Length: 256
Image (cartoon, rainbow, N blue to C red; front, side):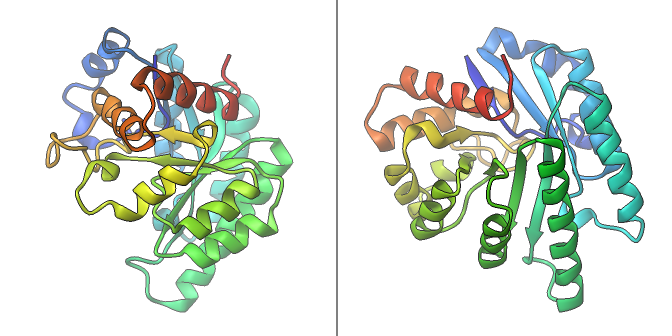
């Protein structure tokens, strides 16, 4: 059974066939999916899918690209979602994204909102799902500051040295279809070194479809490609990677 630990079925690209697609997953050996929210609206949608499909779980949070002037009020709503909806298993997708944001004041606000959500995760005893794009040093510093908060750095793009420190802090590392691309040298180095019991797989649907599906709308139907690629990199059986990565996700997100 495969566990796609990060997929955004709230995206408009799934509007025409969302129900049929999600309903088909068990027949394709996709036994678990976690849908993280990026703001209040998408967090609500993630919860609605988790309530409808027994194999879907939700995470709720404010993505760094979705911070608005009312983010303090939004965090109050996010907290209530975690407290009152049992199918919410993590705070996320949270973190830092400096790729588009060059203004230092806006980056500072991202850091504040990230820290507040880390505090919320610690208070509520939930793991975090961290988005880190071009912000490795500041994301790592926040992870250090909130040592003891469990979580995963999704779509991990950092160095081997960063991976070592995150693993020492107790984090998991998750990988998308990027690892199937020809230029994925850094991720391959990390996968070679990281222990299998700390790796997870994801599609980040509808983004970043793996080879040979690159350029298409991504979905959990393609999560097997990440498992196959990790198995090839580490020289172990596909079935072993499938079993262990699924166990890792179930353990982190407290899914029986």
